[in-house]
Amino acid sequence: MTDTAGNPLDDIRMDTANLYREEVFTDLTVGTLRRLTPVKIDGSPDPDRPVLFSAETQLMSQAGPLPVNTRIEATNLAEAAERFPAAIKDALDRMMTEAREMQRREASRIVTAGPGAIPPARGGGSGLIL
Image (cartoon, rainbow, N blue to C red; front, side, top):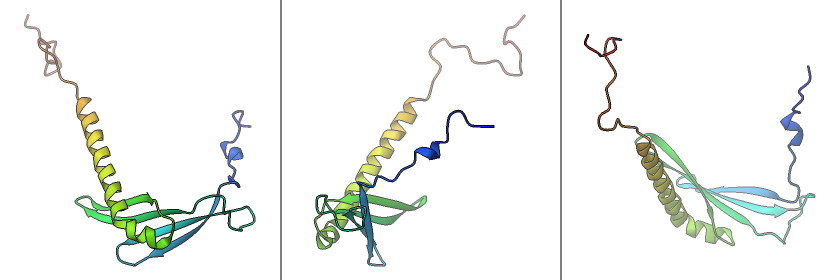
């Protein structure tokens, strides 16, 4: 039996024009910084694209550990480390805003019976007295 739709895995390809070398830096206490250095297909540095930085940490919540990941606008590792606290705070603020918006949307989905609505009968009857 052949799959007429084709195998979706046949379309998976690495974007060789968008490769990065990843380096991880941690203080073993608060968090992790990642530096993504653009490289060419042969692994040599690609100076035409910017180096990217990201920050990662875990915060404790009532539901357990909460992973926080965000990009940091920085040009070097020292600048990324300096901007780490503000970047994490901004990411957490965005997460809280998104969570409140999701709660608001969920609350607005609750359907209530309007005036004059007849409640469903109990016990499987029609609710009519004959």
